[in-house]
Length: 399
Ligand code: SR1
Ligand code: MG
Image (cartoon, rainbow, N blue to C red):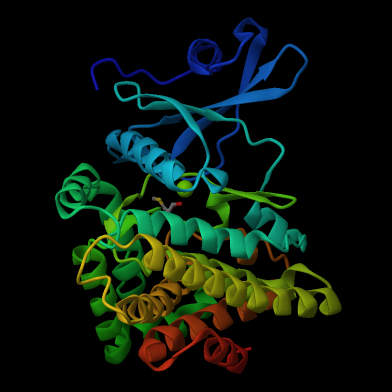
């Protein structure tokens, strides 16, 4: 903390020149702070032709979207850099490349992804990337398998669990996903018209029990090195390409949490589409979203199974049939976590543009109601939904 200072654009240029690995670093001339997330500073560093070449990201010692009243550990920059470096090792094609990391300044230098766009924005505009869902499935299969007990030596796995202990960022998830929406909390944020639906969340004992079980698994099941926040705003897409970014919530947790977050965000887009696009386009885009969820899940399980067949090192975990049994549990967890993402993004602190940018008040409210109803249903019936086709049929019931 002693050497820490908040970066200016000039610092970002100097840092990119020194650590960006460019053959001609002197051509980097200026930077712009472009961070629009909840937590950090993000600088784009441009060359003298005005082309963005390098990204410099710095963690602030507080939550950016709230202010200095909510201090937050700088160690999250280390956790982000180390998670992305580990994920890059297992899936370079779908992980942003970290070029340099400085723990004292909480700064990392990474490849520029200006030829990509944030997936959430594209989903909102109705731009379809046909390979994105399966690429996200591939990314999660690779990183979750290679950081799990299927693959790592037990000693190495335990050392990795210790290296990635991330209590401060986990606490944010623990509070925002599993506590706030189910009690009265000043962080919650929803329109007055939703008051009766939100009160119903607080009074639903079956729902709260199911959420308790999800939170308990989040606390205690160190199954794989998660990205920890893999919503559509943490994913860059381009034609035929996809890269995950923003892994400061990385830690060893239940393997269903990442697929659940991904599915939850595709469903948030599904809920918002009628307010974002004209009728016919919205209907088509909704069908694409459901197809995306199918594609995502099939790729994830098929790739995980293939990796397990080829590379499982543990004798007991290699027992025929065990991978299917494990993935079945991951599936049920993922449905539950998807439900909690739908609910917390609707009534909690941090919302999604897929719903919040809907300009028509009545339409936005209808989409929020749908997200809440769907989220509740998924949490409650997670264990009864056996496969992704059945899941899609259930989602249609809440449309
Ligand atoms: C205080 S951080 C709020 C949310 O933003 C991040 O992207 C995570 O999703 C977190 O829950
Ligand atoms: Mg983020």
